[in-house]
Length: 133
Image (cartoon, rainbow, N blue to C red; front, side, top):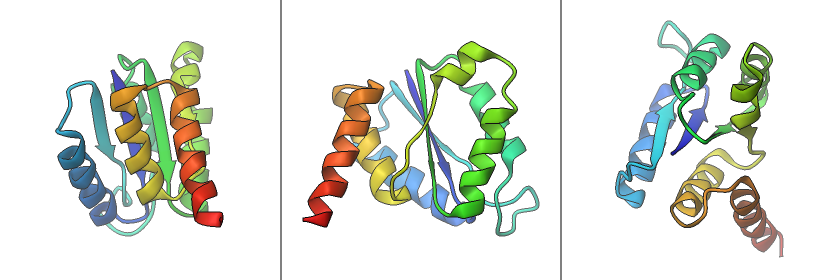
């Protein structure tokens, strides 16, 4: 199983993106999508503690992909990763540097075919390179 964590300053963004990905992947049991947007009080912001809790809840996954939106969201991902005490769990986590919507969508769809880190990164990189040309 693969877990995909969507991190944004807005819970509305990650909830909507989660819905879109689940609809496009057929709500496949091998992929768990998690909405980690917004602050702990429901406002705009990110919460490293919530991200960490979601990572820990995903510990049964073979791979955990993290996608973020803006600067402090990425810092929250880094902070959450730094707070993981369990080395094997940390090793499962992979931050993917890509646009949140496109990257998480392409990565999730790729997981249906080949969920390996190399395949997911390659497919997302191919998409980004196509945009640049």
